[in-house]
Image (cartoon, rainbow, N blue to C red; front, side, top):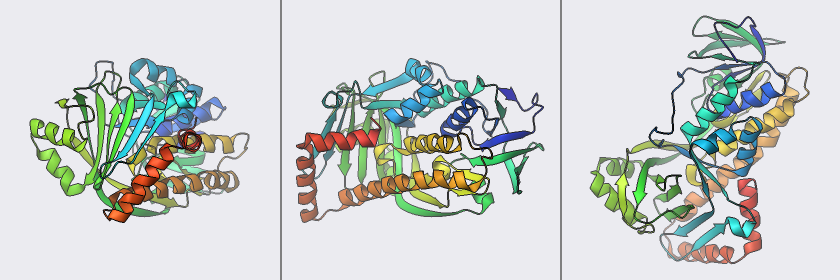
Length: 395
């Protein structure tokens, strides 16, 4: 990798705005395929070590994402830092007896997936990116404006530099500047909810299981971490999230244990708490001539199943696949193939998460009875259940 001071090349095959988990993975995939890549990232690189506190934001990494990380040389780094395999996943209804359990042993797999802190993923993919000669990193820097021409896109940087590329990719998150500057519309679905996150220790071990209790107000997830602690993602109405943030540590520990039905006993320790607003979104379209959006720049979903990062990695794997062997990567034909391949999957996942949210938020007795009956029946159909989880997790 070269930096912005030493580079002599001002034209690139692809410029990626955003060097986060998704953008850096795309840069590695394209560079390994022989493309010249520039990555623009406004945030300064942060240091991470095994002694760093656990990140409040984690992702449930699927086997499909693991494969992509392995391909770019980042998976082993994650695994050696802090990655926690989960061997089981248990979901149950707080307002009834319905439950579903998935076990890796039933699938003939060593695990279902891994819970990994976002900062660990970021460190691993960034290190992989920095080893590639075909990648130029503009950091810290940001995109100021761009102009799409017939044969290229001209990109002006906040630092004053100007570079050109055949394709500009927006991997710059839910508030994407590429999307905004391109004039691409986006549809929002405001859930009026927040995700409260923290890290806790529990009286009982997490048993390498991802636990999720569905409440009327939203799901409460306990996700296993490698040191025996759990990452918490608690979906709540925004005012309730603010209330729980305001509680003392002792009061919060009691409230959390009660909300989780003391499944892992008492909460013995709680770390820093934070909350972030939840909403779904879909860009229309994902692509234009010489412009493509990936990850949260193209779509966001409810974190109910921890699939956000996995969908973003699916995006970049598909985009790299569609650009393979293409002479001019900015031409709309290949970009539309990428959008067709990914939009349907993203929309289906988004609607499924929305359906679950509405289903478990319904308090009518008839709905609760059907919901619990359906969960228990599904749990007793191992062939169907295992096929569903295989598809969902990329096994």
